[in-house]
Image 1 (cartoon, one colour):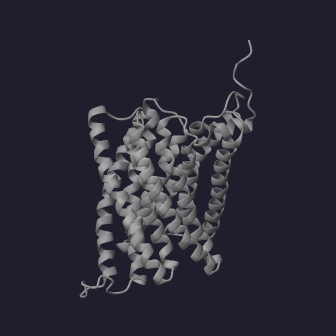
Image 2 (image 1 turned 90 degrees about the vertical axis):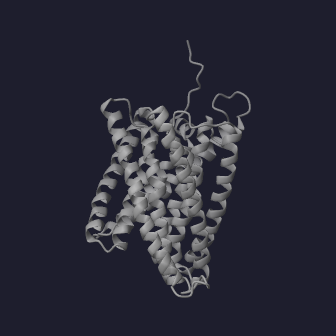
Image 3 (image 1 turned 30 degrees about the vertical axis):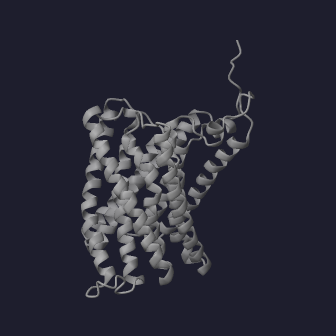
Length: 377
């Protein structure tokens, strides 16, 4: 008896399998490119390796996006009826996919970071001004997407179901990365463009971290009453490491840029101290506290993953990529605090963490390739 399932080419199998969560692959590669550029202890050739990873990430992002577009415009593989708009065009196979739409914007932000680090030294003023425009476009789109999803998710009565509840922070993550982006881009901008960028980045960062605290409290309540998520979703526990770490990176970057770009007495009524100096001190003090919070979330996630692996209740899936980008932020925030505190010990710890993070990225990349080969793509 012949199967009712249509025969699909390997290409169509691949494009039809792509989901919003796949952008986590690009996000992870983009984060590694940034990490290789920013790790405190450099060696000859590391910048070249970082450039290769950055370019490879451009290919990954473009491939995933092309697959989305291809599926949206192609006839239904069953040849029956008109494709459902939500499923085929928006690529929402189940309502929990709504939580993962913002990952596409996060991956784009990581590309902008890479362009700033790897492109600015080799290009003219035009790239700096282009990045300035991209910052405001990104910030506007991130805020609009955040508001839309914040309305659509409860309107459709969508819940995380078996996913780790921290995924509810994902709609607020793109605005949060506006702060990180401001800290990276502002040092290359003229003061008249840098200062509004820093104010905008601080605003968006505040939104993200405040919502993280709310959702973290909800997540803790769920853990207390319902226990840990099933093994399949435990990699998502590492998402909780990301927001405090990228807040550290954003505050450190923006405060450092403010020292160079902001007028001494930007707040006119506080005329006895330099505004940027106060911001820098607050950023480091708050950053140390947030780092401890991130470490606790990291430890909880590691123990939970180890438990699932020992019980053999988990196997590799695409959601394992949710570990990479948050942990990249953990490493970068450690390195930044080491530099801010002028601590060689902490910076060396950051470099050691970099080695471990690159190893994790390579292992997950290898597992992903093996998974694709087994599926015949």
